[in-house]
Structure formats: C-alpha cells, structure tokens
Length: 315
Image 1 (cartoon, rainbow, N blue to C red):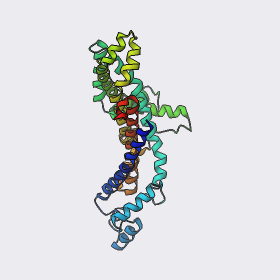
Image 2 (spheres, one colour; image 1 turned 90 degrees about the horizontal axis):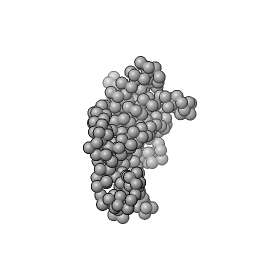
Image 3 (tube, one colour; image 1 turned 180 degrees about the horizontal axis):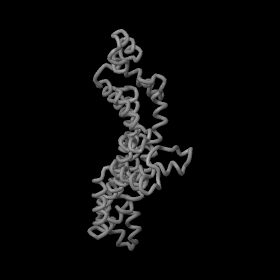
Image 4 (cartoon, rainbow, N blue to C red; image 1 turned 60 degrees about the vertical axis):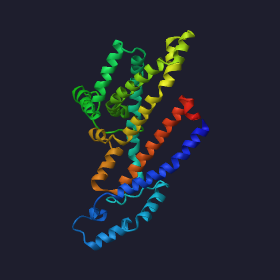
C-alpha cells in the first residue's frame, strides 16, 4: 500500500508542474492590456509603460512564468493589481476555510442521506422502497442547488424565522452560530449530491449482490446485514467514492452562486470579482489552488480505491 501511494505521489509532481503551466498560459490569453485596464482609458502611454514595468508584464512570458512559479512554490501568489497592499495568499487563507466548510458539511449531508437510501434501494430492487428512492433521486437531481437554497431561505429564514438567511460566522467566534449560518448551505448542496450518490450506490449494490462471492457468503449461513456490509458494500463502494470525490472538488470550485446568495466571502466570490476586473494575480492564485485541490482529491480517491480493492494496487 505504501509503495502504491509513493508511486501515485511521484505522478502528482509532474502533473502539478503541467497544471501550473496551463494556469499561467490561460491567464496570458485574457484580452486587453492589463496596465491599461488598471489605470483606465485616460492614462498616458508613458504611465501605462511604467505600470507594465511595475507589474512585470513587459518581460518575456518565460521570465514571468519562472518568477511567478518561484514565488508560488513558497506560498507567495503575488498582490492584487487593484489593491497593491493586498496579498493574494493572505486573502485566500481567509476565504478558503469558508468554502471548505461549505464543501465538507455538504459531503457529510450527502453521505448521511445518500448512504442509507442507496443501500435501501440496492438491497430491495423493484420494491416500493426502491421506487420511492429512485423517484426522489430523480427529482432531487433535477433541482438546481441555487433554487433549493432560495426555497430554504424563504421557508426557514423568512417564514419560520428559525435560521439566519445570510452572512458567515467563524467557528472560533461561536460554534452554534457557525452551524446555524451553514446548515441551509449544506442542505442546498448536499441533498442533490445525496440523490446522485444514492443512485450510483443503488446500482453498484445491485451488481454486487449478484456476484458469486455474495451467493457463497449466503450459502455459508451469514446474516443478510453481514453480507451487505462486509462483502457487498466494500466492493460496491468504488463508483460512489468517485462520485463523492468529484462532488467535493466541484463544491470547492463551483460554489460562487451560493456564496452570493448567502453573502459568504468564499473563494468563488473572490475569483469572479477578480475576473470582472481582470485582476490576474488573483485569477492565477485561485485557479491554481482549485486545480491542485482537484489533483489531491483524486489522489485520495485513488488511495481509497486501492484500500477497498486490492486488485487496483496490485495492478
């Protein structure tokens, strides 16, 4: 297992380098003159040239990339072009925990809701319970998370006044307020995720229950719950684990709409505000962080694959 993890880590290193190249190249394709964008249309050519030199964008692209990568590996992602005193790394450190809290809580909701429903439907195919779960999952997948969020706000914040509608409270300030301000976000993201998770798990469990090793376990007289949990579930977990990994990575990179609905200062809101202004250091920093997060989430999923299925690590 350790040798498998070591091999996967060796693959990650060149992959991270390739990602950094693509991130830098994509930001170079942003149209317009960054210095002119920062200074405005009325700035003189001399002032624009000075600004280009100050930002370092008058140098060859290879030199710019080397300078940016050298600082990035040390944790320095530069400073905002519009707010020269604002460190991109510091802003990400402030905002990234907000997005992580949203993603982790949503994944917990996904597992707590999707796991029992998927097992219920998968162990009783074509039953009434299976049809109810299938219908619910189809309906939940069809509901956009932002629509679910707005309905939750209307019901629990506006009508019932049980929960706050907007703003984020840090866990260190008040764990209870932190929970109250995040629960609606978790449900809005987690319920559609649970529907997809339950649907994938249902299909995987049905396939696993038809395998020879399950029939053998039943022939030995093992109880139904033992057969499902110890034999079928472990082998059926590969596809749902992939779904969870992708959902977690997507949530980290795609929560901008919900962040705006709930007035959270997370990574999504930070990225799109920078995109409107063409603030390249912020765009590069956030894109690089999200891409690296995707890589390590996939690495974790691969390691979990190898743990659940010895054939993966042997291969």
